[in-house]
Image (cartoon, rainbow, N blue to C red; front, side, top):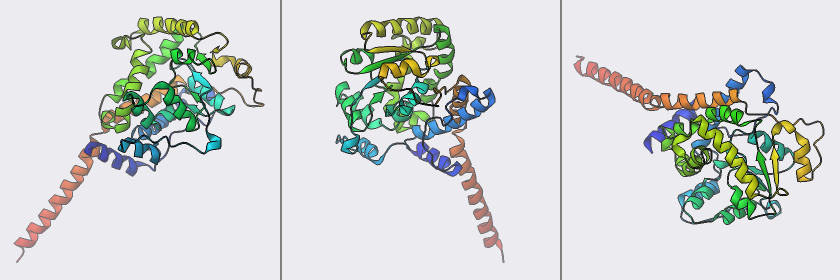
Length: 326
């Protein structure tokens, strides 16, 4: 706990608390590479803050500190149930789709919310709740769409849920993009991230997402291009075989509002372009910042120690001079 406390102190000295948020500009693909890189560095800072547990609400923190399972539902009129499940692999346009669904009025569980729901993930991993109870609680907390918790087998058992399988233009484009994101799991295994309670709780989920799902159950090959390519093809095929055609939308974000709104039976938003966010350059900036943290974290110990030693030596020197003075 001591290194984590030092890291928290250093962070609070560097900047005011902030919370993770969706991109503000919905057309980040129109930015230059350098601007997206700097946006990614800031996103990396937000991710760092979230992984330290600052996004958890008080009720979630209380659940994590006790043995009692408290659902902590939202107001009754805001309670709902899961209606949409995103089934696409990472780096297939899911963040853009999430923002599109929020524009359409949905409340979505995605990357940002994962670090806010550590109590549910903990209960699930400890088998204190099952997958159906997990999603029931999500509904009671106000969420009606999820991209982080529902596998295609679970969706196939619930024909009332609409599923969206996001895809890229071709398998190689998926692999090129995913290989920028894949090192995230290795970063989390290194200090100071491996000391963070939020990371410890979510690590099984991260392992599944970054090493299991993308390789078809061959975690040691999570950085091997051919394994990733073959699994992308096979995974999409398995989803289409398991989930009925009426229940499933295969969706490339380049298709825009049309197919999505038709599938959801909703009108197309007027004068709002379909979101295109989280570019590869932005992701590179995020990974750069998080990697940087793994190199500089010892300064959180060294700098206070050096300052303490300087102060101590100065006081010792002054005391010595005082004793020697006539």
